[in-house]
Image (cartoon, rainbow, N blue to C red):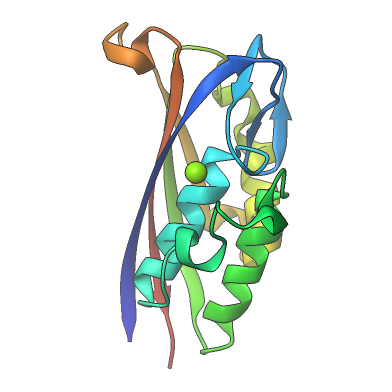
Length: 158
Ligand code: MG
């Protein structure tokens, strides 16, 4: 059996925060605001794998109202969610990620991000891809006020 999952998240970009994608810190003037470490890609991947398996969503598993998750390492949260998913026999076929922000440039960091995601998801780097886009100056993304992550995943089990 195979299942498709979709994840989407957006975080504001502010001064004094780290810009972190898939656990990889990218030097930037502004970073992601969030209750956790703000890793927008880790959040979208978490929602994609949970959605594919109908096991809930990131807000249910790790409520922002719960101070346990304040400044949490979002890759550790993804790892916990993936444990739930893989415990039911699911394996990752592939994961495709699209990041939209004006700055910084994502592509030079693509392979580092892919490797970190692969490690957490018990997958090959070849089955994970990351693309970067700008928003051509349009709306809040285009003004550099936010970063968005869109993720689709395909899972399979016997
Ligand atoms: Mg989020």
